[in-house]
Length: 356
Image (cartoon, rainbow, N blue to C red; front, side):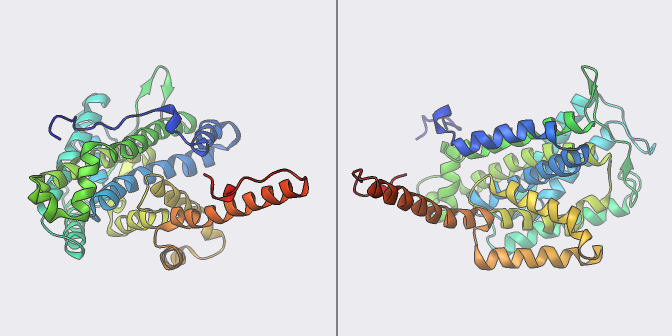
């Protein structure tokens, strides 16, 4: 076991499902037929929220650790971008180069996430949730009340992405492709990382930490490391989020937003990295278009109702619902093909409806 690499998952193009290829083609071509609003406000925002929820899915789905502090970690990176880089408020803003600011912000977020993990990994279940929620609430009130470093309630504005190769990266199409590249990279990293030595060990610790500890694994270190990697994901998403909004304030990292990230992850599905992105697109569409049907003040009621319905009928979220429906559709298709073969007098292979 010790001779194996830390991440030993392998990749092959033959492992890619045709549906994944079609989805990739659609996402790449999306700006060609969508308006700037749908490209930026729907597409890019969905990918950012999905990436933050992906960091939660990695912890909860593979590690059994539900953290409500993932948006706090993303917000920490966003604040570092405003403080170390440039902003239009005139408070702080050290003017570091954007690439150095981004690197330090992401690493700082990962270390902050590892700190949260070190505080919470010795607990389980509701206790982990409460500790991470306490961290999120404490950080929210700290930045809201601190005007020397975080500019208090107003936060920072004028935090913009750079212009590289003559391209302003906050324009809808370039920013969409930037978020798509980041989201796809982290998606495949989590997907294949789950099959690596570390990923399999983390899942085994989730299922039976006592046995893994008896086998000589450092359970606490594995869990803290998982928090560190999830912090990298959330930190990069936080950089994209502050570039998307152009500002960062306590409202961006409020408790309601932390709950929204949990809802996105649960509604989409915690068993597969694609789940957070399914939940994100459902959330963003409801957030943008539900107000055409109901009052803005009742949006949380709509989200809560959708959450309850999904959890009630499919505990594994939208992805679980699809996995339950897909075999029935496949069986119906195979039955129709078999019936057509019988009508044409062609032989039917035994057990054909059980293939695939």
